[in-house]
Image (tube, rainbow, N blue to C red; front, side, top):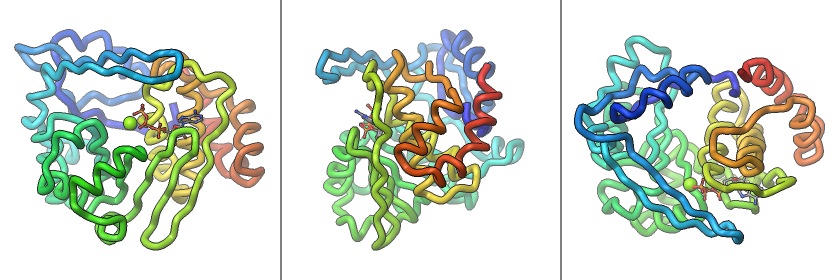
Length: 271
Ligand SMILES: Nc1ncnc2c1ncn2[C@@H]1O[C@H](COP(=O)(O)OP(=O)(O)OP(=O)(O)O)[C@@H](O)[C@H]1O
Ligand SMILES: [Mg+2]
């Protein structure tokens, strides 16, 4: 949607065929997807009430085979600039983080929902040396407790910390300097599922497009709001004129002008 060319890595079941087709149609390369012979694709069921409180249940299924996937063959065949390690089977998260280090590839640590299941050593291994550390506010507190690192310790071990704060926006922390990026006001809050990932998608497309962290976080905030305004995490669309007006209103004319080529390109790529 934003012109980046992501390669998906993960383990799925034989029930993945329809979703693979949908992802490929939307420009996601599924070359790193392993299909299990015995288990179905992991499934997250989320129930949201009128106050946007959520109850989640999770079936891991084929996810437990993700640690068998190697990154090296993908790096040989694709131009990989960054490895994003999100919530997955914990052994897979550790293996992929270590392999990224061994291959000399920058990585982003995004342990999110798996934090409660990680002990101190494993948590430190996922975070230390990351180019980007992503989390929401609650996960950031938990991460400090789990790693037994202070904010200063973390700052010394990651290049950039990006902490999302829900409706309060996001914090981008680079060593001692801190930039707060406001959220883009939502016209209509329909469904919060996937806003965190939406922010990451916009942020990473921004840095991949050559923007600095603040502009990237502004784009991340816009995409998060687009997801918040529709039912479902992946049903959003870019309307370049409308989005540029919102960016100008929220972050100023310079931000909108900088991000215009990327958003107009995204508009054309929308199927
Ligand atoms: N009510 C809101 N209004 C506008 N923007 C919002 C709102 N809630 C979230 N966002 C945007 O989404 C980003 C991520 O939100 P949040 O910190 O709640 O992520 P999260 O808890 O990881 O979400 P997820 O439920 O996807 O895991 C925020 O930084 C902000 O840009
Ligand atoms: Mg999240």
